[in-house]
Length: 262
Image (tube, helix red, strand yellow):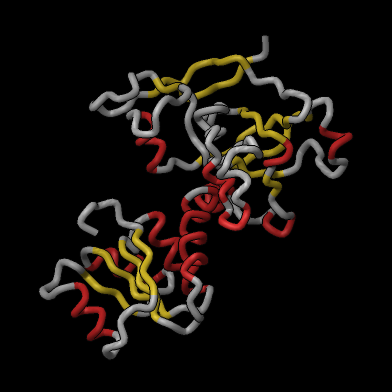
């Protein structure tokens, strides 16, 4: 039997203690007819992985992770017939959604991109072993091939985009405001927040970054924020934003902070 290394969750789900993992040999997955086997070279560690390990997402598997980058190692028996452009060696990303059922009320809600909320929850770390391993399986129809023009971009820069990046981008895109308007991002100095600042700046918005402390301000300005509001200084947030924008305020707000008060 072929094996591979995986970081396996060993603590009980729902535990209030810090989750524990053990690296051990597991049976190497074998692709089904419509799946590809991916050899992973990098995985990100998302905040939701901690939540999953602690039971906040319901029942999960023991191999978590959903920000993986790697290359196709093997094809299922039907893959070549379904898509001749898929080849062993192609660089791919492995994200949160591994597949969808295509029939539930969420999946058929195409206007609102409902498939991301598929009721079957065919997610990485739940229905499929996650990316905390050397190998994982991906259904062909949800295979995310990385374009060749990104070959020089390191794995560690791509991995966070597969969850944190798309989360930030979708939130900004959904606000549907006009470039050139003020756009506020709370928790702007964190992982998702910093990506949101970068995306909003690239999309032509005037970014107001909101976070706590001068160190976060440096991070936000480096990612393209025009203004930085430090919540630890005197005054209400609304007053600070209005004063900084000449009384205009923000046209839209994305909250990337984990604190409930935000």
